[in-house]
Length: 483
Image (tube, rainbow, N blue to C red; front, side):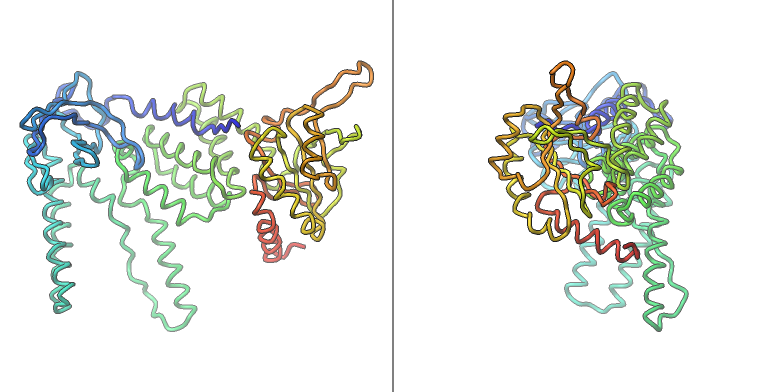
């Protein structure tokens, strides 16, 4: 089976462009190129890697160096490196995070305690970065000690206050540096006190609603959404994932609304491309029924609608993908299937009765279909109790193979169809349906569930989740007062 997602090709396009070495809007402080000298005591020979983050799940290697017997190594190149948060990997699972602003600096540390023993030359960003880590590390050790010893609460509160004062002072001192933005991005928004006294359960509900609303509205306040250097850190991706997973209702209308609101705040070209890609790819491959409508919206509005952001191949692929998806969104009447049944008679989707219709696309030669089809047929009594008609459709056009499959899995009690039609004039077989382009059948088996009007209410439902889905759907209809 070939499984293809447009996100894969778009990812290559976006990645190839964003990961290029390029000039940023940050004023240059060094000539083009980079020269980074390092010494890590405790290393004797071995390869050292310099890579920048690309979101929280990928790193892009930009250079390698060979350490000598004393742990000295040099990264050097003639092209400017993109600014952001980098890691220097010096042994298996051991690395240092460093900030690349000025790309001509040196440092020295050891393998025993890389942070506390770190010394930089000619890098204000990293001096501030490691200074912050050292000081915060010491203060949190003191705080944890007091908490474990269960000291006077006022003493613990004083230490906490001193930590906050240190952070505020540090931010003010380093406000011109990217490291200040970087550290700030790790902070959650601070929610102001609730002004109303909580006396009743209604007050409590209002309190929690106030907290949630404020938190969601200000979720991105501490991250500069127009600084492209954040693409090369883990924080932008983590923020996006948390926002859309935890704070956005996983229904198309809500996803679309919140995505649009977020993108009105992003003007920087590279950040905009990155965020559009991340949201789009999330909902193209989501397992939540119906969220592909959000993907279709993103593709139509931000790929096709903002074609200047992308290369022509990406726009064309997205336009083609949307053309396939839009007729298959939840609530749409499924495109008509024109099939032949085992006796040679015409069989169409609209001719099948029932409160629900389950369309089961399969390939007789598919091993997974041979595993799932018995699970489908085992639910015959349930289907009958719910007035669910099952239309099993072979996407392969081998009549004997199709008939053998029906017999092998005892499918005679359901509707069976194949896209083979005999031309009365020529006597030749004709085919009507492009299953990939019309029904998005990129793997098999795939299940669509239709209501009595043949509108799509569920798709790509696992065979063993059909009953759960029907129960969920019917309960949802009752909640909405729909009969």
